[in-house]
Image: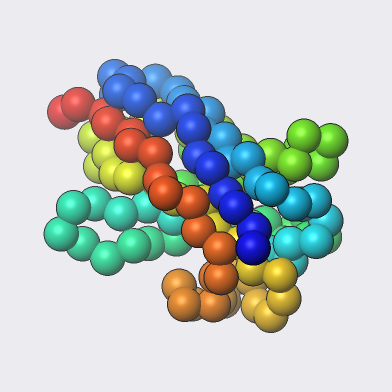
Length: 124
């Protein structure tokens, strides 16, 4: 069973930056697709960014140009660098992974492993 643990959330003013981390209990090279999702209370979970085992990345339109997803193979940690944060980025951010299958087009249910989430708040 792969365990994912997020950290790095907090409250930051609009225009500021945060870097989220997701520590994994296994080698990143064994995970086909790693992703960040977010969820606002009362709404569904939406994809923010994904990275495939070969390094190919996909971003949601809302994240493109502001967020960057990266992997540290030595530490087995996934990151999400978030810049130019906006009030609408306020959400709980989740790390997710699967070991096979699709990545860019993978549906929520195709991700087998999930973290417990970390709260990001950008006051309006």
